[in-house]
Image (cartoon, rainbow, N blue to C red; front, side, top):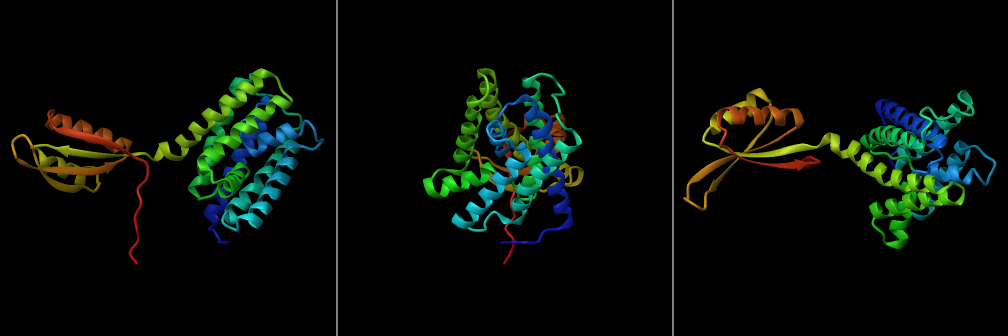
Length: 280
């Protein structure tokens, strides 16, 4: 198990854990909507056990980490262990600083929306450091190993079960909001993790080949790959430029190409991840 990480990673993990705790304490708990997470399950359990949600979350995460270590091994790493335990500590701090906190919006639906957005930012920051908030991630890993279930499906199933558990102590409206919040929360988290990093793979065939290539290399300061292909209709050999650009570069590139060759043949693909394999 890797036990070292940089001060920058430590700072990001701490801040992101505090952000997730903000989402839970200031938006989820006042609304009583159990958007699928370990903290949501702790909220339900707190109706039957006279302990603060922060304490239940801490104990639950610690228990799951021990079970995962014994049954799976130390593959979660020190980062997930750290965030799993420090996040409920931040919740406990908020309970001390803001006791009996009431909803800011006074509307459960708005609380759920705010929770989804704020927790999405926190989890995306954790993901950038190759960590998670623990909780249901651990449950999903256990389901994957012993039930053979895909991790993504296991996460969705466990989240929905937590959302449905709100039926044990809350009304129908809260249950429906919990299920919908869990579903859309997953979409928003995916957007924050993947959507902000989406790039575009642009393929261009144009008689203005040299001008477009020069613009990509010297104005956008991006790289490009050149392929030669033969048209099936007239057997004419043409060169194709392929480049990967971000959203702003894409718009600039499209404006430039349209300005010098409105009839250029262009295909565009979304690219969610770019990996480089280091030389051995």
